[in-house]
Length: 146
Image (cartoon, rainbow, N blue to C red; front, side, top):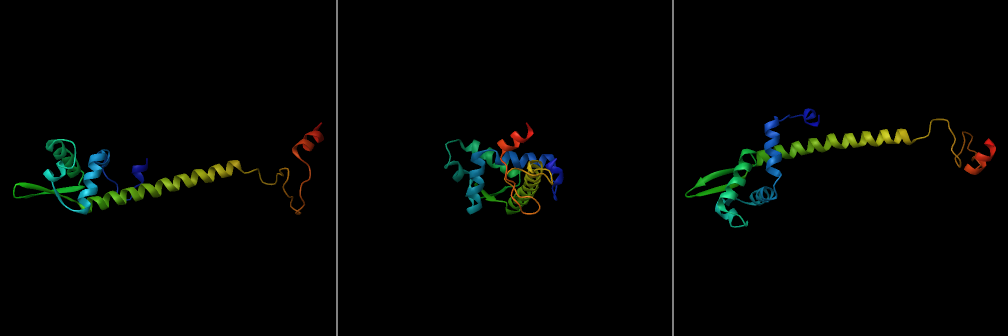
């Protein structure tokens, strides 16, 4: 399994929390916004066509995934990016990319091997080992067999 090939393996629960956090477009947008600057939960709630409680729940999902942190400042809850958590996600996705690129390269190699003609065989229109071009066409080759 791909997850077993990671250098810094995460538990199934950690992976589930991360992918669940990024599965929702509102949560992805919240992460994007708080990486630029901090927001209060009420400030975030004003940006979306949903209730304050719904935005709070989104922030809680992101917090459980260690992508954001909240700090109480007076009566406000301030949300900011957790850069360590985001770096962990970046490393994870970079590792997935390496694994999948290696797999696609291997598939391409296997396909190239199966598509190549057997060694030593001549295809019409190719040159032989002496550099001479094979002259007959597929039609002529069929006539020679008859």
